[in-house]
Length: 184
Image 1 (cartoon, rainbow, N blue to C red):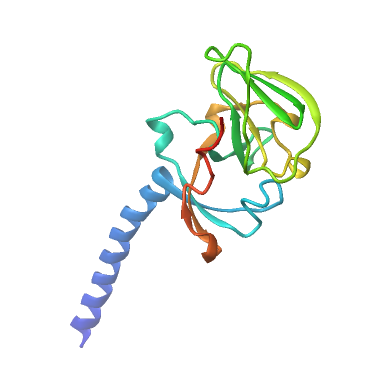
Image 2 (image 1 turned 180 degrees about the horizontal axis):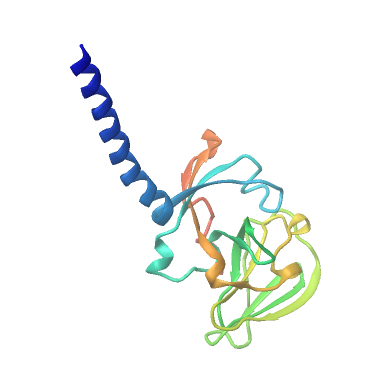
């Protein structure tokens, strides 16, 4: 009986060690859970929505316009924010009332960003010129969002990853839950 108990303990320790060796690197380098808190992305992402963040993709591709990202807040790196990428490096973003105009090398006169995911607009005027490695991010609920309009551009090195999977609430489960294909 003592030998069975000893084998059980050894097998449990082996299993635990293997599980830690598999799960820990996955969680640190590939994907992490994220719980949405606040109204800045409403109605697309609400408080209590449980997301899995893809941390791996941006090692191989650049963040794209329209993607919903999770990043460290520039004014307090211990806090994490969720916002949508509006402006890419080396672009100029102009907010003109409820319109977002993007100017870049391909569109020097600019184009109006189509934002079908926006339910509540804000009306302000602002121009932001992005340098290499800088992004302009906005919340989907503009009146309730602290974003690049308030604290400036987002440095690329603060981006943790993109919203990959929504697991909760169950009636909103989905992969890449960001409506990223209808932007211009």
